[in-house]
Length: 123
Image (cartoon, rainbow, N blue to C red):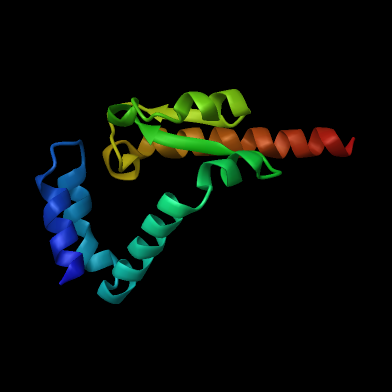
């Protein structure tokens, strides 16, 4: 089925934490949910201006990526747009598995800054 085939492909890639992510998929994800979600992700990625929508969103934004994905072509554009960009060390596509402590720390810091900015704006 689609979920098992996807997990097998992920498991074989050499990036950090792929095997852990793949091992967790069958117990954390309903098989019927995966194919439609992936189809819509591909459709939106290929045919919708997702990057522009993210950049133009009228609220604070943070883009998180793993160290092994530091060559993503759009990171510089995100940085120039004013979005906060957070590289998570010792991780690749799944930083929530390979470096969860750093991921949650960075997310918490971002949320704290947003909360502080909101309080400052109200004063």
